[in-house]
Length: 159
Image (cartoon, rainbow, N blue to C red; front, side, top):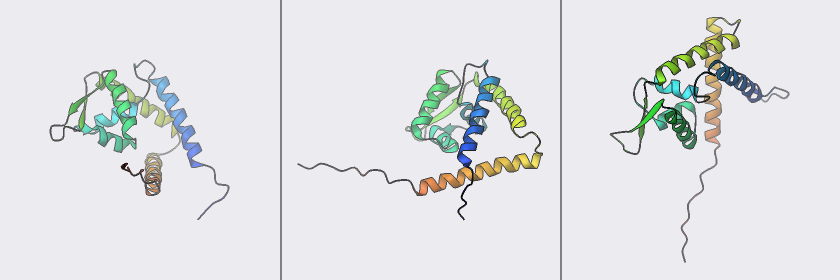
């Protein structure tokens, strides 16, 4: 059912994201990093070796962006790439000791900002809000993949 005059969900989500990220940078200003907080936490939460591709899939990021993120995190001394023994084309991501206190700080900042953003919502409503956002992301991701243009076919030149 098409609804005219409905506000843009993307606009409001983008504004929330900008404000949330500004809060993260403010709360974590004493760290030597200013981005890729969620990527670092996701590596920690994997609980087992995670590949760059698996992390990219979790974060809904393309390969090039994921490589840049890992380059950034490894340059800061938080993550190391290790060649996967089963498939040398893949790299496992390993957290370095320096990452542990930073991850604790990031999680504390998430908790603080989540409390601010969802002030007045009970535990069930908070859980529902996050579930609804994940649902919307999944719906949009599937729709975009279903309508993505086909990659250009390679042609060979003949003389």
